Amino acid sequence: MKVITDHKWKDLRYSYEVPKSVIKKQFDWIEDPEIGQSFFKYRNYWYHLSEFMSCHNEVWSHGNPYKSMGWDGYHTDSYFSAVLVKISEDGEQYQVATCYS
Figure (spheres, rainbow, N blue to C red):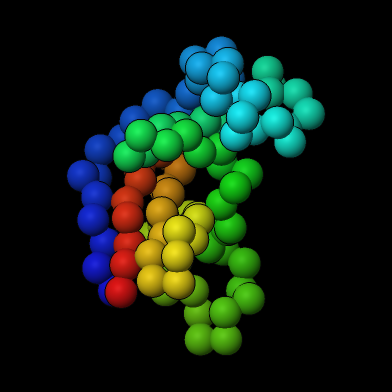
């Protein structure tokens, strides 16, 4: 498994920092987008943390490989790739990576 990241901590974004057209198109399912600092942009695409599966849930039969690499969540792009996210202890920053096999 190959992981590509710059290891830099970046600030999570509030909804007012996300273009309104993106909120309307991508996140119309969020009841109140004004709550929380949960958005980030990666490779020209906006994500919300609720779109990520937790690496801390033990649903994998042999342990979650992303958790063993230190990541907190993953969002699958395809059968062979995923976006990984690590959240800072204070919950205000993130690191992001692309993972593929």
